Image (cartoon, rainbow, N blue to C red; front, side, top):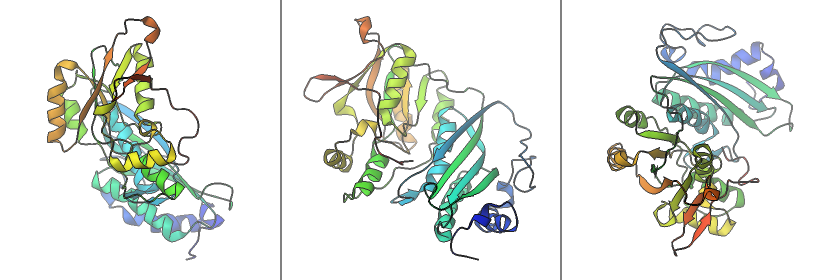
Length: 340
């Protein structure tokens, strides 16, 4: 077989079957080719069948493009699986299946594609999530970035988390922020840094969500746009003001160094293994303890309030370490291109 992707690999014929068998089907055990009693890639057809599904169905999709494809801590394959798993989990659902759609450029190195898809499949194996369907396309040389992976996740839950942030809620982050975005920025700008992506599945949070079904009022994984985007969306949805304490935000020194050089704000940088939670004040301390028990490094960084002046509704305010205050705007422009 050639060491580069050819247009023929996307023609739907013999070459397509050969590459799918080599890169995907042969790497998956039979029990991860379908859901229980269902039909998936074990039986080639135009779609998958999910059987015996009980509860409310949650569906999420995400398209992934990152430069470079490989980085300390993962690859675009790691992101493709993890990002969609985390989207499902943030809805309070247990991931039960995934589909993928892979688009590669003619001439893409076959070994790189093999490594990328192995990374993606390993995440599915570790989390016992079947890959029940997908698609594979090849675009003419130089007509697109080397590879784009879309994934669709399916989950089930009895109590979906729909963001309904409330007055007096406490804002919690489950770990240090800005790591993935700072890493990718450092690689793109040629800055020496000892960062490793925080890309990680947040499935352990399902235990917390089950234990506090009425106290979690909002849950997000702040990828593109960082916590700034998440907090602004919550402020707008709730018609409240969110106040954040700058000194309480966990930003690693390496992230600060990269952002000082690039002029980027750590609060707008992508995270790939961190959640932001808006929780009932009465349960916040207990939730922090449970997060610690689950292996997270949670920090309480702020609260949701009803502003005295109605003009301040829907704003996110950062109280600075020197005692001042500033508005945290919704991110705009091209913050870090091709980040996740």
